[in-house]
Amino acid sequence: MTVSVRDLAVVTRFGGRLYWRDKVALSTSVTLSLGLGIGLPFLMDRVRPGNPEFLLNQHLGVLAMILVIATLNQIAVTLTARRDQLVLKRMRTTGLSDRDILGGEIGNLVVQTTLLTGVVSVALYSLTDLPVPRNPLLYLVFVVAGATVLCLLGAAITAIIPRTEVSAVMTMPFFLLAGFGAGGFGPLLEMLPGWAGTVFGLLPTAAVVEVARVAYAADGTIVGDLRAAAPPALNLAIWAVIGIVVIIRWFRWETRKS
Image (cartoon, rainbow, N blue to C red; front, side, top):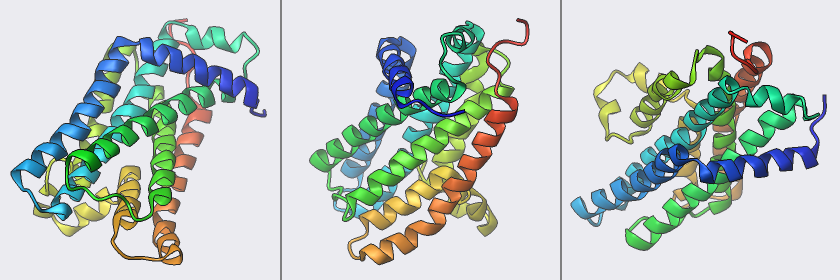
């Protein structure tokens, strides 16, 4: 089964229109992401001024949380709702392939998430002492890659979500784990044993944060950046494969009752 670029674009545009008309998505993915992403680092910058390293750590910790909110959480809620409302089942009867439908949904949220992180970053560059990344392209590539992988995992998680009403609750632990592991809630990880940091370092959000640190580093070369980005890229690739395998084997297009 191949992916039609035209059909993929159609589903992506359709998902985008629904996204900006969805009050729940606007209040969670958009409002919460912008409020958390800008507000918390801005507050920390005022509490501890003149400490760019602390500010960067806070920003990257919150970045991991934003990625989970806007991708994994959002796509899990969206796909579960459309599955239970039989929207996905009807879309399959239109001639769209399964890959076009899921690819369009993922593409839409990757675009929205990239825009959200861009707005957050520009706001912090303007309002705080947060520096601009030395390698913005590397930073952008891994934000997009991380958002894509998290969308795949969010779609995979719908296989164990029984109904729409509990979808947000069932995805919340992933938000907490991402924030805790990346330092979004502060340096709490330092109080745990060393193996805990190793485990949290296996999360896909940890891969994005690791590369973001490289992109923000004051010195470095293109070769050095690519070498440092190789292990996180492998991390994301492994999670992507896991998400795709689960989707192929267990993704449900309609409710169990139907």
